[in-house]
Image 1 (spheres, helix red, strand yellow):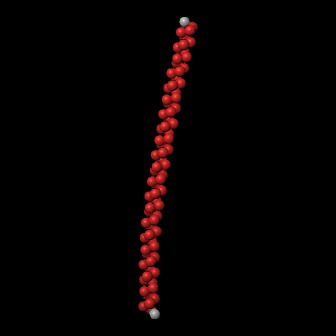
Image 2 (tube, rainbow, N blue to C red):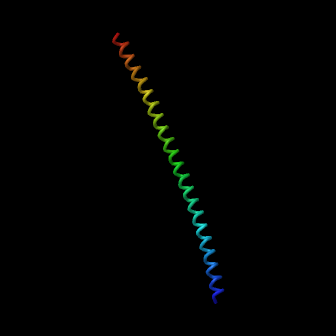
Image 3 (cartoon, rainbow, N blue to C red):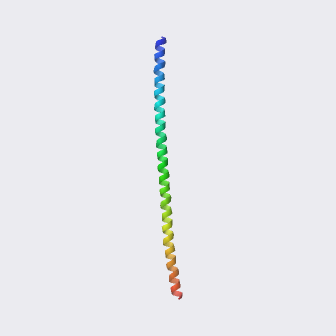
Length: 79
């Protein structure tokens, strides 16, 4: 009976070790995926920020140009 119990214990230990290795591998994969998704989210956020910043700058430049045109028109009418 004791040899049988030893074999059962050895098998159970091997299975536990295998499950632990599998669990660690899955955790590493999950962490890698999470960090990759986080990095992608940061990149997208950065691109969105740059896009909005550039759009505002272009709008400001266009608006400033239009205001200068109005001011020049007023000056020429008053002259």
